[in-house]
Length: 288
Image 1 (tube, rainbow, N blue to C red):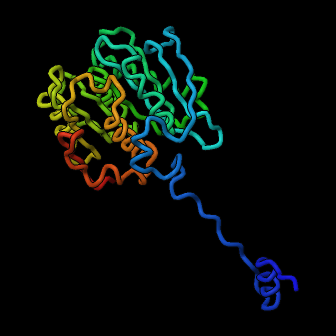
Image 2: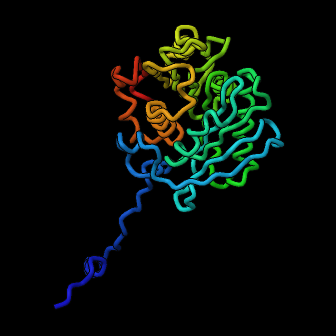
């Protein structure tokens, strides 16, 4: 005896009662910006994520910033990706923050690490250059078709971190900002509307948390999605070498706010307790 398919059976049944059969609706993905498998602690602490990556060089002759390197997922079947621009600090070059390029790109972002027009550029200039780098990525780069221009973020170390705050204040459409042991003479950032993760270091003598990262964080609006991560036994240069704690929480923040991927909320809320790597963590949980 042969069995009829479910569709055939339903059609016959409908014919008998004189009613039409309607196929079940195709449900849209709950979040069309999710990229990659469900995260685990191991996956966000790993030196590489699930996406294979490639690089392309941006020449120093480019307009608006000093050139750089673009890191991007090689897949062409996963949809477009959010993008992040990252600035080095005072006298630093992109090599000082280059470890973040493949680490973030392999988690599903297009990343540009930039050189600045001058190694002596101040934070506000670095902020302008971060925005120029994002505009280059989305409008002129060879990978522009891989990027969702509505899902962008900025990061930076030291004066580059101060620059990321200035970039966020100037472009509220950004989705995330992460100053890493940031330095800036401006201590009040109440105008910032971009979800911001402030990363400080408890042994930072160049940008001490008491006069930089902490006031940056507390000056941000109480209604803003924001967090403060203070690294334990860490100096101002902690972001210049591969750092699992920085990577773990940066990935989670970028995924949560650039990709709106609530699967990463578990790593941010409730706020992590102090441990061997974290001296202090504050967060405005739950996130909006």
